[in-house]
Length: 151
Image (cartoon, rainbow, N blue to C red; front, top):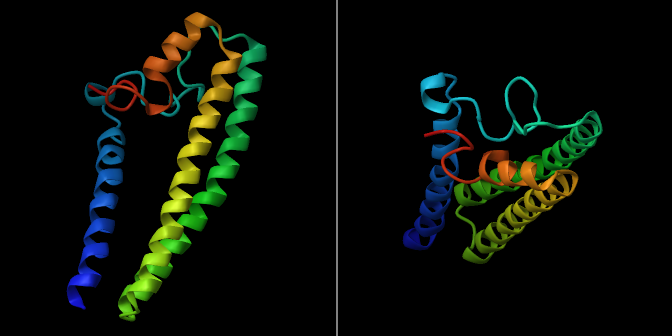
């Protein structure tokens, strides 16, 4: 029984490390580490550090960002709730079926988060010129090498 519980616990710990380590690396504020493009949003403008944005593009992107952040906040809160529920189940030495069901719920939420992120990225790209898309694809939203500018 102990082995059946330890496998999901280790899987969760490894998943947490996979998520946490890149976030830790990109969370530094020293310019030596991350330079201008910090990933999700540039610290000063919040517009993915995209060059030559028009005021119309800026307005549209800001609106998209706000809606995306609201949506993601709800999903992330739901994810954290499910993770706490899993921890409670693990502490109660519940049946493997209950543990597996909770892990499946967590995986479903993570999948939704990824899909929403990709969808948002596509919506932002629709607003950009070809030149801006090329820049955005290389440096925008923390995608690509490092964390959108980290070396």
